[in-house]
Image (cartoon, rainbow, N blue to C red):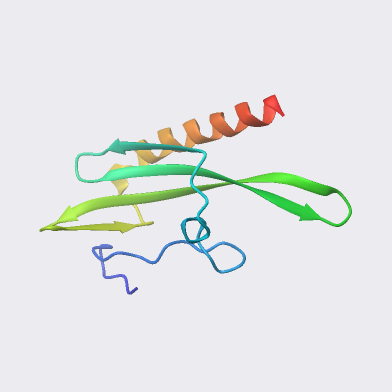
Length: 108
C-alpha cells in the first residue's frame, strides 16, 4: 500500500525470505508485548522458525517484528514506521524482546 507523508496510511506487512508474512504462514508469535504511547499502540513480537542447513542440520532462528497501531475515525490503521515520541517505548519493548530471546536460547 502507498504511504503518505507522515505515515498516515496503513503499510504492507513485512515479508520474510519466501515472500510470506509469519501471520500468513499461521505461525503465532512466541512472545509479544504492547504499550500505549499516548497516540498509538506499539507492539513488538518474537517469532521462531526452524531453519534447515545442509552442513549443520537444523537450528532455531528468531525474528522480531514491530508495529504501530492507531485509530483514525472509526478505522484502525497500522504501520512499521514510528514517530519520534514512539522511540523510547519501542526501545524498551525491543530490549524486553531481546532479553526473552536470550533467556530462551540459554535454556536450549
